[in-house]
Length: 379
Ligand SMILES: *Cc1c(COP(=O)(O)O)cnc(C)c1O
Image (cartoon, rainbow, N blue to C red; front, side, top):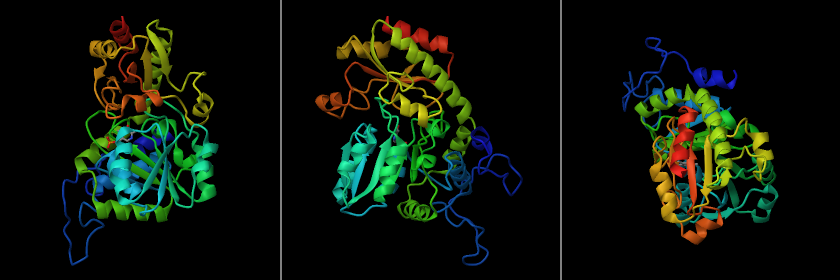
């Protein structure tokens, strides 16, 4: 089955009871047993729920994995991955990272004796300089948030295989429409399904997808033992979201490209960060491992006073000023005062997050309206 067919049919069967084409929302915590232990595959909804199972099958299908696991948030999914480790283990992570992931690693898991090192992975050969006997996991985000850096998943996977380290890729920004990390050698794919997978800004959810059976068993054990699952209602919404992922992503990519090119020629814009430009430092890798360049575009304005930039985002009318990304509606964010406000100015400027940086999650509205909106806000 090809990708666009998988988003609609992958892992799905009509419901056994009445043939419902969409899986019913099994809003139940428990299941009747005919005799102790005599159940029909479902006994308690932390462990399994038929609506969640349908979603987990869809996750596995669209990422070319064998097993999918759904969680109550993206961070709950990451939490489950780190629980594969033991005190004393080390993790090497990309340094340009989603802020919540950084917080979970440093403020929670460092307290349990796991060490995290944040390094640039733009050149994969540098990773080996940091690998020790204790290194058990490589954590990669690509494209990164908000600077849109690209990391070569195949090259990182080669390092991971050589040293027998697990490789996990946060595929939230790209989605499997653009990039399929398991096929490039990753062991675990993670999603904040809150973003493009759900696609309608109406749920918070996380996902893990793996190929290896043994690894899936360890993760299912953690999912059930720690219990950070998502409910049946949200599972239904995410399944519905997945069915249009390919058509939404196609338009996100078209609109993202048009906005990136518009910004590039605008006299008040300084730099535009979008992996589709030939002068993007890792454009050649993006072209190789992604089928298109996505709907996320960041840029800096020449006006670099904090107040001046805040005025620009406040003036936007079609773009909504808000956290999050990946929904059908266009959103704008000001990382310095929003997602990255907790990082000291000197620290965030090291990775390029200046006061003048604006991040756009380009939606699927008419492109003329989006460009007119940016024009009036910058003008
Ligand atoms: C939002 C996000 C997360 C966290 O996911 P939640 O669903 O908010 O818990 C992790 N990684 C990336 C890249 C994200 O954008």
